[in-house]
Image 1 (cartoon, rainbow, N blue to C red):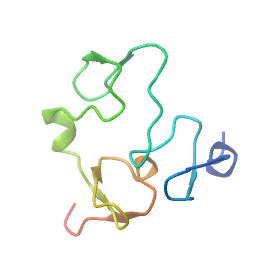
Image 2: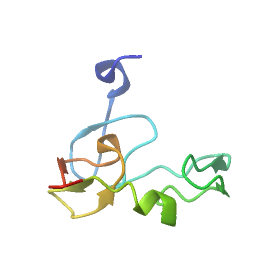
Image 3: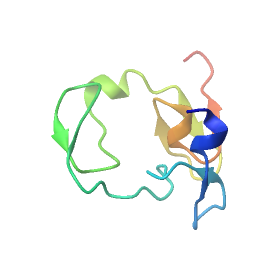
Length: 83
């Protein structure tokens, strides 16, 4: 699936295009727990942040200041210098 096809939703908080799972600005709580790709923990917290994930933080939202390992998790991502 292309990024354009995935970005079909609009965030009601910031107005940015997002995927059906939302982004950190306004995440949608998953129906079923998922396994974190960084630490392997099962969680249903869309803002789950574990130590292995913290080591991969490379983006900051210029709108709200949240940090993320992937740009698609933020509404206005900017790569952190040196990350």
